[in-house]
Amino acid sequence: MWFTIQGREVMFDPTRFYRSIEVPSALPDEVTTPEQIAPLRSKLKEMEEFGNTYAKAKPLLAQSCESLSDHIGKFDSGMLRYEAKWIEKDKYAQIQKELETKKQQKRKDVEAQRLRDKQIAEKQVKDREAAALREKQLAERQVRESEETALREKQLAERPERESDETTLREKIHRNELIGPNAAEYEKLMKQARELEKDGKYLKATGIYRSALALEYSKELEQTIYKCESKASGL
Image 1 (cartoon, rainbow, N blue to C red):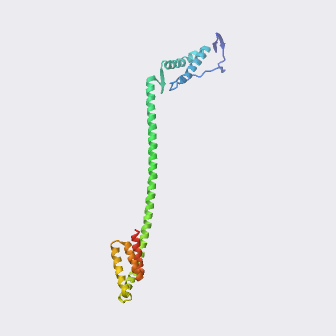
Image 2: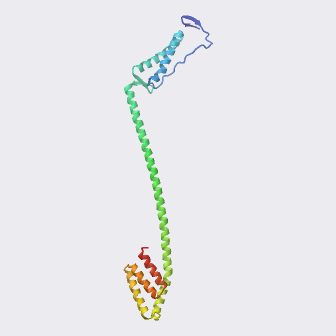
Image 3: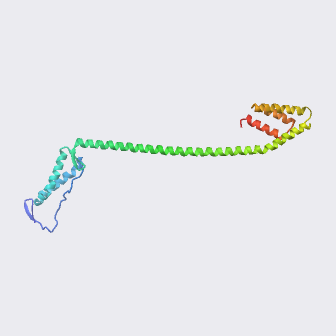
Protein backbone atom coordinates (compact mmCIF):
# COMPACT_ATOMS: atom_id res chain seq x y z
CA MET A 1 0.00 0.00 0.00
CA TRP A 2 1.43 3.32 -1.10
CA PHE A 3 1.36 6.56 0.94
CA THR A 4 2.71 9.98 0.10
CA ILE A 5 5.04 11.13 2.89
CA GLN A 6 6.77 14.50 2.52
CA GLY A 7 6.32 14.40 -1.27
CA ARG A 8 7.57 10.85 -1.68
CA GLU A 9 5.58 7.76 -2.48
CA VAL A 10 6.29 5.17 0.20
CA MET A 11 4.96 1.63 0.17
CA PHE A 12 3.85 -0.03 3.41
CA ASP A 13 3.07 -3.65 3.96
CA PRO A 14 -0.63 -3.68 5.01
CA THR A 15 -0.04 -6.75 7.17
CA ARG A 16 2.34 -4.83 9.41
CA PHE A 17 1.44 -2.17 12.00
CA TYR A 18 3.23 1.16 11.58
CA ARG A 19 1.29 4.03 13.19
CA SER A 20 -2.28 4.72 14.29
CA ILE A 21 -4.42 7.54 15.61
CA GLU A 22 -7.39 7.36 17.97
CA VAL A 23 -10.52 9.02 16.64
CA PRO A 24 -13.06 10.15 19.26
CA SER A 25 -16.29 8.23 18.93
CA ALA A 26 -18.33 10.87 20.77
CA LEU A 27 -17.98 14.36 22.12
CA PRO A 28 -18.17 15.17 25.86
CA ASP A 29 -21.66 16.05 27.12
CA GLU A 30 -20.33 19.16 28.85
CA VAL A 31 -17.91 21.75 27.51
CA THR A 32 -18.23 24.99 29.45
CA THR A 33 -14.63 26.06 30.20
CA PRO A 34 -11.40 26.62 28.25
CA GLU A 35 -9.91 23.68 30.11
CA GLN A 36 -12.64 21.40 28.76
CA ILE A 37 -12.29 22.56 25.15
CA ALA A 38 -8.47 22.30 25.18
CA PRO A 39 -8.37 18.46 24.68
CA LEU A 40 -10.67 18.83 21.64
CA ARG A 41 -8.39 21.45 20.10
CA SER A 42 -5.42 19.18 20.69
CA LYS A 43 -7.18 16.17 19.15
CA LEU A 44 -8.24 18.19 16.06
CA LYS A 45 -4.66 19.37 15.56
CA GLU A 46 -3.38 15.81 15.96
CA MET A 47 -5.83 14.40 13.35
CA GLU A 48 -5.10 17.21 10.86
CA GLU A 49 -1.36 16.56 11.16
CA PHE A 50 -1.93 12.82 10.75
CA GLY A 51 -4.05 13.39 7.64
CA ASN A 52 -1.41 15.72 6.19
CA THR A 53 1.25 13.13 6.86
CA TYR A 54 -0.75 10.21 5.51
CA ALA A 55 -2.81 11.52 2.58
CA LYS A 56 -4.89 8.38 2.18
CA ALA A 57 -5.92 8.61 5.85
CA LYS A 58 -7.14 12.18 5.44
CA PRO A 59 -10.51 11.27 3.90
CA LEU A 60 -11.08 8.79 6.72
CA LEU A 61 -10.49 11.51 9.30
CA ALA A 62 -12.40 14.26 7.46
CA GLN A 63 -15.78 13.71 9.14
CA SER A 64 -14.31 13.57 12.64
CA CYS A 65 -12.19 16.65 11.96
CA GLU A 66 -15.23 18.49 10.65
CA SER A 67 -17.29 17.56 13.72
CA LEU A 68 -14.55 18.63 16.12
CA SER A 69 -14.00 21.86 14.21
CA ASP A 70 -17.74 22.60 14.35
CA HIS A 71 -17.88 22.13 18.12
CA ILE A 72 -14.77 24.21 18.68
CA GLY A 73 -16.25 26.93 16.49
CA LYS A 74 -19.45 26.96 18.54
CA PHE A 75 -17.47 27.28 21.78
CA ASP A 76 -15.39 30.11 20.33
CA SER A 77 -18.58 31.86 19.23
CA GLY A 78 -19.73 32.01 22.86
CA MET A 79 -21.91 28.91 23.12
CA LEU A 80 -21.52 26.26 25.82
CA ARG A 81 -22.23 22.54 25.68
CA TYR A 82 -24.43 21.35 28.56
CA GLU A 83 -26.12 17.94 28.87
CA ALA A 84 -25.05 17.08 25.29
CA LYS A 85 -26.62 20.27 23.87
CA TRP A 86 -25.14 23.60 22.76
CA ILE A 87 -26.83 26.54 24.48
CA GLU A 88 -26.26 30.26 24.90
CA LYS A 89 -24.19 31.48 27.82
CA ASP A 90 -27.14 33.39 29.27
CA LYS A 91 -29.28 30.27 29.35
CA TYR A 92 -26.43 28.30 30.90
CA ALA A 93 -26.02 31.00 33.57
CA GLN A 94 -29.75 30.80 34.29
CA ILE A 95 -29.56 27.02 34.60
CA GLN A 96 -26.60 27.29 36.97
CA LYS A 97 -28.43 29.91 39.02
CA GLU A 98 -31.44 27.62 39.32
CA LEU A 99 -29.18 24.73 40.28
CA GLU A 100 -27.49 26.88 42.93
CA THR A 101 -30.89 27.91 44.28
CA LYS A 102 -31.86 24.25 44.52
CA LYS A 103 -28.58 23.45 46.26
CA GLN A 104 -29.13 26.25 48.76
CA GLN A 105 -32.68 25.07 49.38
CA LYS A 106 -31.43 21.53 49.85
CA ARG A 107 -28.83 22.76 52.36
CA LYS A 108 -31.58 24.66 54.19
CA ASP A 109 -33.78 21.55 54.18
CA VAL A 110 -30.92 19.45 55.54
CA GLU A 111 -30.21 22.04 58.24
CA ALA A 112 -33.91 22.25 59.13
CA GLN A 113 -34.10 18.47 59.35
CA ARG A 114 -30.97 18.44 61.53
CA LEU A 115 -32.58 21.03 63.80
CA ARG A 116 -35.79 19.01 64.01
CA ASP A 117 -33.81 15.88 64.85
CA LYS A 118 -31.97 17.81 67.57
CA GLN A 119 -35.22 19.14 69.02
CA ILE A 120 -36.74 15.65 68.98
CA ALA A 121 -33.66 14.25 70.73
CA GLU A 122 -33.78 17.02 73.36
CA LYS A 123 -37.51 16.41 73.91
CA GLN A 124 -36.87 12.71 74.35
CA VAL A 125 -34.21 13.48 76.97
CA LYS A 126 -36.60 15.84 78.78
CA ASP A 127 -39.40 13.27 78.61
CA ARG A 128 -37.10 10.62 80.10
CA GLU A 129 -36.02 13.00 82.86
CA ALA A 130 -39.64 13.92 83.58
CA ALA A 131 -40.60 10.24 83.68
CA ALA A 132 -37.72 9.51 86.06
CA LEU A 133 -38.81 12.41 88.29
CA ARG A 134 -42.40 11.14 88.33
CA GLU A 135 -41.20 7.66 89.26
CA LYS A 136 -39.06 9.12 92.05
CA GLN A 137 -41.96 11.20 93.38
CA LEU A 138 -44.24 8.16 93.21
CA ALA A 139 -41.71 6.06 95.12
CA GLU A 140 -41.33 8.79 97.77
CA ARG A 141 -45.11 9.08 98.05
CA GLN A 142 -45.45 5.33 98.51
CA VAL A 143 -42.80 5.39 101.25
CA ARG A 144 -44.54 8.33 102.94
CA GLU A 145 -47.93 6.62 102.74
CA SER A 146 -46.39 3.43 104.09
CA GLU A 147 -44.93 5.34 107.04
CA GLU A 148 -48.25 7.08 107.66
CA THR A 149 -50.05 3.74 107.55
CA ALA A 150 -47.56 2.26 110.00
CA LEU A 151 -48.06 5.25 112.32
CA ARG A 152 -51.86 4.89 112.18
CA GLU A 153 -51.57 1.20 112.92
CA LYS A 154 -49.30 1.97 115.85
CA GLN A 155 -51.75 4.58 117.16
CA LEU A 156 -54.62 2.14 116.80
CA ALA A 157 -52.62 -0.46 118.68
CA GLU A 158 -51.87 2.03 121.48
CA ARG A 159 -55.46 3.24 121.73
CA PRO A 160 -56.80 0.33 123.86
CA GLU A 161 -53.88 0.85 126.21
CA ARG A 162 -54.59 4.60 126.43
CA GLU A 163 -58.26 3.95 127.06
CA SER A 164 -57.23 1.51 129.75
CA ASP A 165 -55.04 4.16 131.38
CA GLU A 166 -57.91 6.66 131.30
CA THR A 167 -60.20 4.09 132.91
CA THR A 168 -57.59 3.41 135.59
CA LEU A 169 -57.24 7.13 136.22
CA ARG A 170 -61.00 7.58 136.58
CA GLU A 171 -61.14 4.62 138.91
CA LYS A 172 -58.35 6.10 141.02
CA ILE A 173 -60.18 9.39 141.27
CA HIS A 174 -63.39 7.56 142.07
CA ARG A 175 -61.61 5.60 144.78
CA ASN A 176 -60.08 8.84 146.05
CA GLU A 177 -56.56 7.50 145.46
CA LEU A 178 -55.90 10.98 144.12
CA ILE A 179 -57.08 12.71 147.23
CA GLY A 180 -57.15 16.23 148.47
CA PRO A 181 -56.22 19.22 146.38
CA ASN A 182 -54.13 17.12 143.91
CA ALA A 183 -57.16 15.43 142.40
CA ALA A 184 -59.10 18.64 141.99
CA GLU A 185 -56.07 20.44 140.60
CA TYR A 186 -55.38 17.54 138.20
CA GLU A 187 -58.90 17.60 136.84
CA LYS A 188 -58.76 21.37 136.48
CA LEU A 189 -55.48 21.25 134.58
CA MET A 190 -56.68 18.45 132.33
CA LYS A 191 -59.87 20.36 131.48
CA GLN A 192 -57.92 23.53 130.64
CA ALA A 193 -55.42 21.60 128.50
CA ARG A 194 -58.16 19.81 126.56
CA GLU A 195 -59.92 23.10 125.78
CA LEU A 196 -56.67 24.68 124.62
CA GLU A 197 -55.90 21.65 122.48
CA LYS A 198 -59.37 21.79 121.00
CA ASP A 199 -58.80 25.47 120.10
CA GLY A 200 -55.50 24.59 118.42
CA LYS A 201 -53.34 26.18 121.09
CA TYR A 202 -51.07 23.17 121.30
CA LEU A 203 -48.06 24.85 122.88
CA LYS A 204 -50.03 26.16 125.87
CA ALA A 205 -51.90 22.87 126.13
CA THR A 206 -48.58 21.02 126.27
CA GLY A 207 -47.42 23.13 129.25
CA ILE A 208 -50.61 22.51 131.21
CA TYR A 209 -50.54 18.78 130.37
CA ARG A 210 -47.03 18.63 131.83
CA SER A 211 -48.25 20.33 135.01
CA ALA A 212 -50.94 17.65 135.27
CA LEU A 213 -48.33 14.95 134.58
CA ALA A 214 -46.34 16.21 137.56
CA LEU A 215 -49.34 15.51 139.78
CA GLU A 216 -50.11 12.07 138.37
CA TYR A 217 -48.02 10.17 135.81
CA SER A 218 -49.73 8.13 133.14
CA LYS A 219 -48.49 6.73 129.87
CA GLU A 220 -51.57 7.98 128.06
CA LEU A 221 -50.95 11.56 129.25
CA GLU A 222 -47.34 11.32 128.23
CA GLN A 223 -48.43 10.31 124.71
CA THR A 224 -50.97 13.16 124.67
CA ILE A 225 -48.15 15.59 125.50
CA TYR A 226 -46.04 14.14 122.68
CA LYS A 227 -48.89 14.59 120.21
CA CYS A 228 -49.42 18.21 121.28
CA GLU A 229 -45.73 18.95 120.90
CA SER A 230 -45.75 17.45 117.44
CA LYS A 231 -48.75 19.55 116.43
CA ALA A 232 -47.17 22.65 117.92
CA SER A 233 -44.00 22.12 115.86
CA GLY A 234 -46.03 21.47 112.69
CA LEU A 235 -45.04 17.80 112.31
